Image (cartoon, rainbow over all chains, first blue to last red; front, top):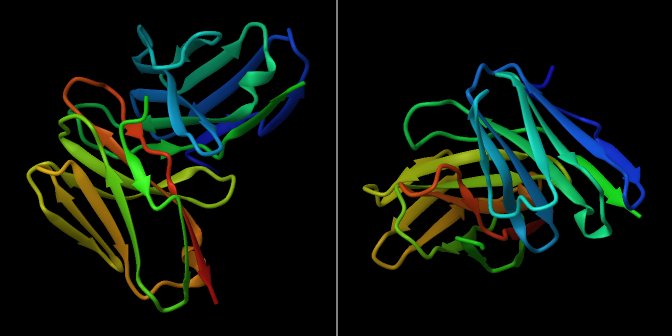
Length: 114
Length: 111
């Protein structure tokens, strides 16, 4: 089983619909992240969390919200989806303590908003 | 905003050749990491170099870091078709609590 699991892997929805992307991890990491990937733009940070009570906005948080339900679960919501939110979304985790350390990524959730 | 910018955006080489990708960044960092992404898949960590290091090796990978020029390079030696992927640099600095990624280099290794 994957250490970082994202669901759904693919989703097509319509403008105005509410969408939730879920992420769960078995690595026991405190730090969890949501990134968005668009062609030619690399990855951009949406939200991140260092523990259940610590939620922080990234560089492109507008139009998104998150919930850290437990140490292992971090969900991303689009309250009212719009077409320019069509992208590949990645959840990632990192071990806590210090400023170093690698990110472990899920396989991504491809979202299409029509 | 993008912290790291990779160069070139795309690179096509023959199997057995070396591939070099460059990354430039804007602010002071405490570490720089390289990641690989196979088409449409999650990113996988390759190597981390700290700001007080100048060069690091891992198998066929060699990473250099020049903090005075705010740049890093990733060299893949004796490339294989299986090295075909996108490669991203990511920087960490004391002022931010998350890595900032560049736009990536798409590497195509022709068999």
